[in-house]
Structure formats: structure tokens, C-alpha cells
Length: 257
Image 1: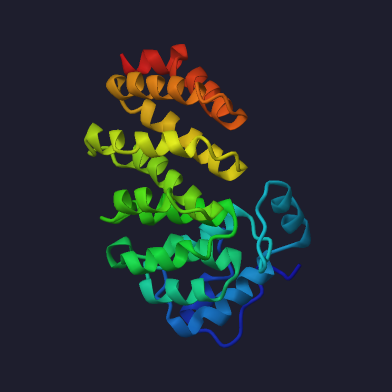
Image 2: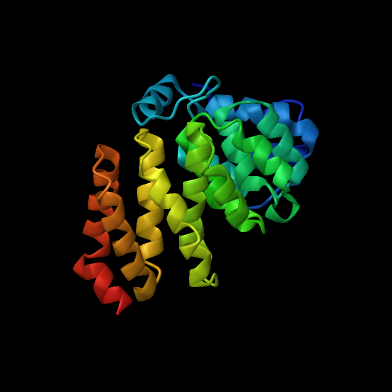
């Protein structure tokens, strides 16, 4: 693997000072769309075959992947100002890590429903899906609408995105009223019949996170889990049993009361 401190030729002096030392610098640089090739070169230098193999063991695969770990990727993102145009160009590159970086540096206030639908169609692994939904899409005014829209889609990672969005909203949107999450219940119930691994895990995640918001939603999520369990399929039983175990646990009940 290339020396992490090796400068990248052809990039501005200020940017060159920031990129090589990603473990040490916290200043943010003004990048341009023309800097995409240099950022990709930096990502390539941070990757390794070992990381690619390790990611694959956790179900993180893609047609184009450098094999960059989460920590250096997030450190690099912290050096880049929010930049909607740059994020769009990084996404177009098709590289897994570039798309994750795009989700980290994009500006939620500039994200449109059209962009969300365009990006979600490109999801081919759970890592990029969850990153986009958990750090970008759930911060937009369209999050609830897209969660409901996508969870009805037949494509595995588009459907997963819908349920992941529900889970992320339950965690991050502290001001949302209970009725927002109650709207998700019929969709979670239908989604529980999907036995695809990345879908059923997202359904389970959403049920658990919604049920941990407050005591009222906890009781409703427990009731929902019982209804899901009654379907009798292997995916429904797993989703419900795992959710009930956590939602009924002494630690959760103590926190909510």
C-alpha cells in the first residue's frame, strides 16, 4: 500500500497540506469538483486487498471498491466542507468509498427528491445504503415520504433503504410526534414477510428503534411484534422474537418509565 503521507501531485498547496495527514488535521478545505481525481487517488492509497476481503465477509461488496476502512474515510470527510456539487461528482465515480464520502459531505438542505431516487437506485450493498440514509437522507424534509415509498419497492436495497430510514428517523428526529412512526407500522408489518436478509434485518431494526422512543410507542411496537410473529414465517418469527427480547428487556423498560 502507498505511503499515507505521500503528497498527491496536481492539487492545491492548501489541499495538499490537508489530505496527507488525515489522522492529524481537523481543518476543513475548500475542494472543487475538479479535485475528484485527486480524492479518488487518495482513497486508492488508503485501501488494501485485506480490507476488501474483510468487508466482503460482512456482506459489503461492490463492483468498484478500494477497501478503505471506516475511520480513515470519516477522517477524510471531516476535512472537507459540505459540498453538494463535489458530492454529486464523487457519487458518479461509482466507487463504494467515494459514494460513502459523498453521503458524508453532501448538504442535506440541497438534496432533492430526484437526487434521492437517483442515488437509491445505485445502492448495491448495505453499507452505502445505511450511510446515505443515516447521515444524509434522514436530515431532509422528504425522509418520511421516501421511507414509505421505498419500502414498497421490490429491489432489495431500495426496500432496505425505506426501513433503514424509519430506524434512523426514530433515532435522530427527537422532535417528531408519535403519529409519524405509527404511520410506519402497516409497512413494517408487510415488510416482515420478506425473508431477504438485508430487508428483514432493517425491518427488525426499525421496530426496535421506534419501540425505544417512549413508553407509548414501546407498547405499540410490542403489539406490532406479536402480530408479526403470528405470520409464522421464519423471517417474521426472527424479526418479532428479536424485537420483543429487546423491547421487553429490563434495561429498556427502566429507561422508558
